Image (cartoon, rainbow, N blue to C red):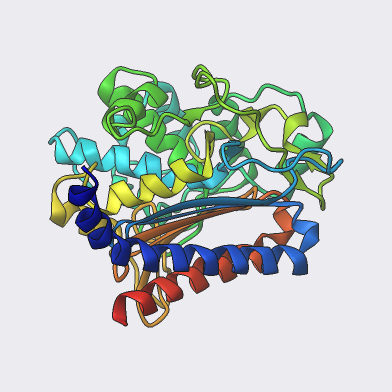
Length: 371
């Protein structure tokens, strides 16, 4: 038996050694970043790089501000606007199935109630398309502004409904411009996309998404819409997420303020990276041309880097990316065929921690592939 095992082990050692070396470098980088930014409280990271035999998860710091509980790699968080790539992908799946078209007008796809509200506020729904919603070029005024945050602060336990959020979009501002003219990021676009999922599938949007995204088949068992779906069995407790400028703790807020498609998903950091990996490897949207459309610019790149549910940045290599309000960031590099998710528990530290780790690790992966 040993004579047969020895050559097999020797064969695999060269393949594992580079991955192990990279993991040591990643861990050293994470430790260094945390030492320099202890106000981040806790950092979660997952690197999924199948071409290099690497699937690595790590955590540094603590799960809540009393610093009594070390952060665990299996603790989920609210991923906020990182929900949008999931909604966009579900819409593309309906396009792939022939149910929708990207240039289809949204008027007939909405509920009569939503359609009446928007038309009463002078929106020409015949000129707004699914592509406009996906790319935030619809010209629909968003409901999220400073006053909205004030309302959430004043009533942290208030149960928001998507109807109230749509109504607020109409109350706080008029149409911004002719659809397709410019870019303005707005959760309202994705609330309407979630509604379209419901009208076209006759299912709650979260149930339709779970089916269309093949979450069960892909093993993404730790991804769900908090309060709308049952919590996965055996999952660790949420890590606390903080927005110190607002004096917010995610545990103290009713998640309905950011729940109905613009945000709402909860996930572990590993699930977050794996979703991007499965998506861009073609395991969810099988039509390669349609999948390419997701990362193609809708407006000139100097005007908007946002495509259809993801940003497309050029750092000398393409990087597909999305971020979430609470401090969650995920990117995928087609050059390395690797996805990296970085979740920082204190929102205000996100800009220091997440971009550095995400880009530097992609750089190390690229260098390792080109050696």
